[in-house]
Length: 238
Image (cartoon, rainbow, N blue to C red; front, top):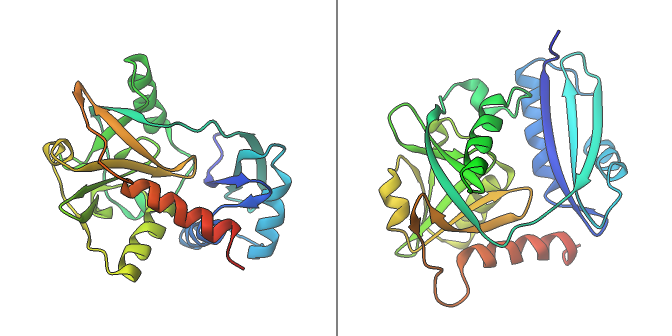
């Protein structure tokens, strides 16, 4: 019988877990919603995650099953300098209480990623039933236009990613306009900058969507500034 549960994938850099508290908070909320016992503190979670890393940079997956048992596994983190996205309409994201939970059933995401990779792309862009942008198969999507940051609403069925949460909160702290809404693919193609966020690289620029090539912004791009803030808070703050 297929086991049910939730999971978190945390990146470890130089012995430190990046944005660990956000991962634990999402895990805790998911466990509470699904009535899964979670007898761990943040400190316990940190110790378990760090024990799963054997490299300077790795991704550690913590899987919590419905009976409260868990497993931990690690793999090297291979980062990308840029990504190409394939718009894919055959897989749709649907909003529900479960779309807010990082559950084990990710076959639709794996299928979408497989289709994209077979066609020479790095990721797939997915949409909700009305054709609005939702997310990438394994990442959240952001775009910048006229100094305003945009990202699809959670109502499109996208996952509340840890980097998505961190970036939105950061922008609001700094007085940067950020809009969560319903957007069409054309708005990505007209943006000043497009990037995706995930635990893998924190943020990585999008250089191509379908056959349309995007130009990187002049000067220091927004995604790079975001990465620097995460680095500072991980390694420089006390």
